[in-house]
Length: 45
Figure 1 (tube, rainbow, N blue to C red):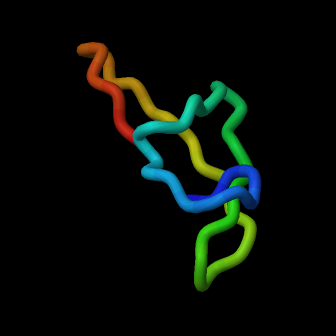
Figure 2 (cartoon, one colour):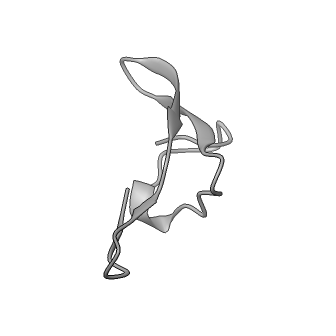
Figure 3 (cartoon, rainbow, N blue to C red):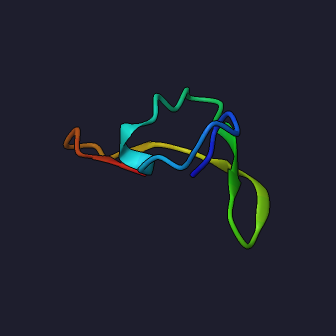
């Protein structure tokens, strides 16, 4: 992921707000990613 065009970073290192985050994904262009939280509190990207 390249959230601010300064270089790629791992998605799990990003602060993703509840409404999602628009980032650049090489080979796909601009996409919107979301963080999900299960009922048990487990977090996923």
